[in-house]
Image 1 (cartoon, helix red, strand yellow):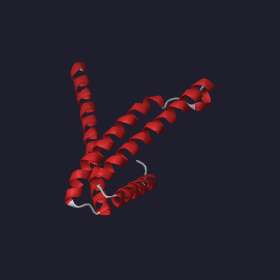
Image 2: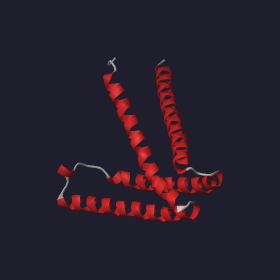
Image 3: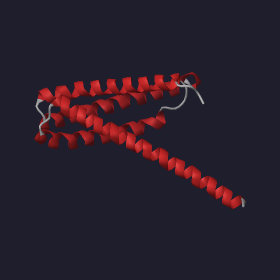
Length: 152
C-alpha cells in the first residue's frame, strides 16, 4: 500500500511540474508573438524585410540567452559576506559580461544594417525599449492586482 501511495504522490508531483512547464512555454510563446507583432508594426517591415530580419533577430536572442545563462551561476552570494578579493573577482566578471554583451550588440548592429535600412535599425532599438517598458508595466499591474486580491 505504501508503494502505491508513493507512486501516486510522485505521479501527482510530476504532472503538476509538467503543467507548470507547459504554462511557462505557452506564456513565452505568447510573449514572443506579441514581440513580433509589435516590432513588425513599429518598424513597418515589408514582407521581404521581415523575411530577412527575423532569422537574424532570433539568432541574436539565442546568443544573448546563452550569454545570460553563462553569467547566472556567477551571481551568487551577498557582497556583505564576501572578501575583498571575491568582490573584486565578481566585479571583474560583471564588467567582462557587460563587454561581451556590448560586443554581441555591436555584432548584430552590423547584421541589422545588412538587412534593414538604418532608419529601421534605429526604430528597432526604440521599439525594444518601448516593448520592455510595456512588459514591465504589465507585470507591475499584475503584481498590484495579485497583492490587492484577497488571500486564501
